[in-house]
Amino acid sequence: MEPECRVLSIQSHVVRGYVGNKAATFPLQVLGFEVDTVNSVQFSNHTGYAHWKGQVLNSDELHELYEGLKLNKVNQYDYVLTGYTRDTSFLAMVVDIVQELKQQNSNLVYVCDPVMGDKWNGEGSMYVPKDLLPVYRDKVVPVADIITPNQFEAELLTGRKIYTEKDALEDMLHAMGPETVVITSSDLQAPLGNDYLIALGSHRKTKADGTRITQRIRVESPKVDAVFVGTGDLFAAMLLAWTHKHPNNLKVACEKTVSAMQHVLQRTIKSAKVQAGEGNKPNSAQLELRMVQSKKDIENPEIIVKATVL
Image 1 (cartoon, rainbow, N blue to C red):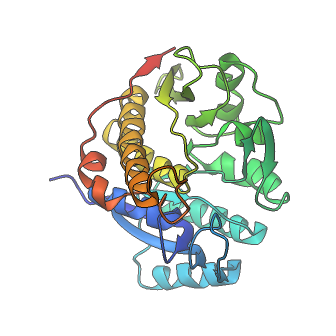
Image 2 (image 1 turned 120 degrees about the vertical axis):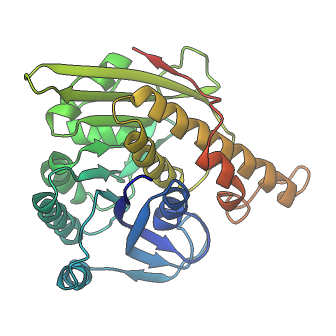
């Protein structure tokens, strides 16, 4: 039996639907991880709905929760996973916690999804306060081991526009700290055509003798004609799991992650269309990810999306 692997996941939480911790916990548990969750926000539902209510955790409250774990000596983790955050002091406190956990366990892996914004119709905009950017850039990314920005977030972090694959795969994000960088989505032209979305990954490892090996990959997945929420959280969680199971093979880890994503999204859109009825556009509630129904695909995904080694 594999030794128990523990994840501390600090993300948003919703009562209804699948984003943040709700999107990350189930797949991680299905794949054999023990998950402890801290909810950075607790909302009734995600903000894609017309209405939402809830609370935002502040840095003092986060510190208090962590102190409780510490007092009971149960703050031993193999992974930390973070996603959506709205507050700079909260984010700075996350960095303090990660650094303390890394002092306890030098093998701890921090997986960071730097959720800041996205592009719509070619135009990028931030959906968190702008003062989070310098905290991500100067404090968070340097202590992260794996980061999963989209193209817009990668551009924000590096201060450079990405026009080509070469731009995306330059060592700038590695130079900031992380060994593994996966740009989860981009508006770059896919070799397979306009109906495909490109993700790009780069894993850089320094061997004991000081030499560096870099593996770079491109993944092209079919576009799905709908707006889903929680896909980035699901992606980061599954990438954590599959890089754990295939630590030196980013190609296989990404193929399993993206293939599982495709299975979940195809099942979700099919179900949403049935619920909406012929000719009607599915609403936010109908487009909630079909996670439980996709358990087998998350656990053992049939590889339907292949990665290209660059």
